[in-house]
Length: 170
Image (cartoon, rainbow, N blue to C red):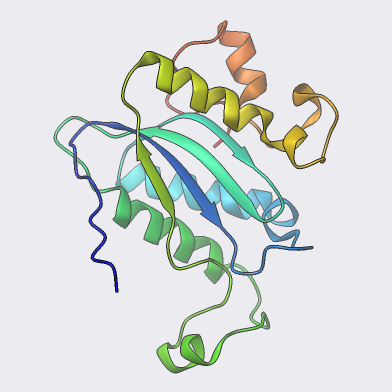
C-alpha cells in the first residue's frame, strides 16, 4: 500500500474535494443542504477556518479553506464535518462488509482530495473550477443558476478572497 503523506503547512490555503460513498444518482448533499451547513457551522465554531469558495453538488463538494496561522489540522475538521452530517441522516444506506465490521456509515468516501494552493493564479483557477463545476456536471447551463455555491457572494464581493470567512455558503 502507498504511504501517502498529507502536507501540513500551518495557516495555508487548501482546495478540497469530498465525495459521497455512492456517487451516481445520489442526491444526499443537496437534499440535506441545511444539515450540511449546520455541520460546517458547528465545526467552524470550535475549529475556526475560513471558507474562501465552495460548491455543493448532489454527491460531492469542492471548497477552498484558509486555516488560521499556526494550524494545519484540516483532517480533524473534515472528520467532524462528515460525522456531524452523518449523524443527522437516518441509517439505511448501503454499506460494504468492511464498513459494517468497523461500525462505519456508508455516507462518505473515507478519504478526500486536498491540494495546497501555491499562489494567486492557482487560487483563481481553483475558485473558477469550483464555480464552474455545476455546469461541468450538467446540473445547470449557467454558473449563476446553481444555488449551492459561493459564486453569488463571490460576485457581490467583486472577486478575490472572502473577508467574511464563509465563502457566502456556510
